[in-house]
Image 1 (tube, each protein chain N blue to C red):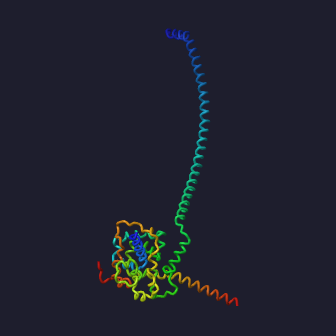
Image 2 (image 1 turned 45 degrees about the vertical axis):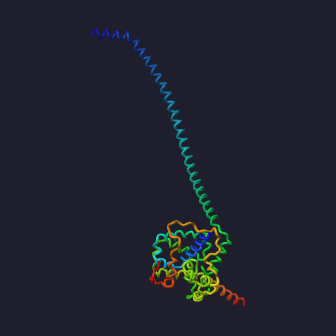
Image 3 (image 1 turned 120 degrees about the vertical axis):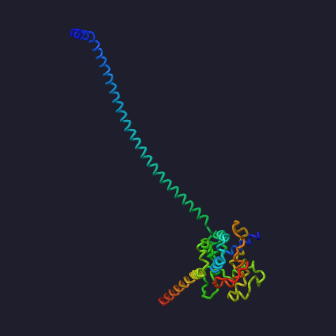
Length: 224
Length: 121
């Protein structure tokens, strides 16, 4: 017991100063920490203010982005429509035909009753809106296969009379077989996928009489 | 170039022959529409649709027939005589369309003139 009390006394005298110094030291540290905390608080506050600014700027940028997007949309539509318009202008320009030519052509196809029936047409009239057998046989294609059996200019007068179209005999060619083509008006080159001569006319002239005017589906002979 | 000139005239004649439904029936029954080379030839003939060629056609209706001939179904149908006859009848009726219209107009005009004369006096 005595040893403990002596220790306590010793402790008290020697270490009072130490404890006091420690206390002062601790207080000093505490004060420092307080200052630090205050600073940190200020900084934190500033950070919050800046964050708010950043948010505001962000929303501004997003707004601007939306507007730019809309503007781009509108411009793209306008450009597209302008391009379409240009295309149609080009197309119209390409298809332009002189009115004189159109009138000439209209004259040509109507005068010969090719697209409009003659006013005196009655059933029994041999005229048709397409080339008839007679016209076909008298044409260039028909001539190619029957060089020897023709009369004057390839017309058998009897045929023409029978068809009731006498005036046509006087024309050297039917107007549907062009005579006035420009020499540079050549048909495009064909591929090798088909035969050069239209095959129909070789056989047509032989079987013409029985097949073309009637509707029978059988023919007597097919000569090759 | 005589060869090309001849080819031009031959093709001009042939393409217009296609306006004749009886001829088409003839070709169908002879089996030409089954020949691939012939079908290719029909496709080649489509150049007559261009204005610089079409202006030589006296029977521009042939172009419609040519367009229809590009379809296999049409080519197959043409083997029937009734089909060709039907087309022929419709063609002739259409051909008479303008004459009929003109006659009606003339009649209407004549009637109106009569009416005017009657009311004038």
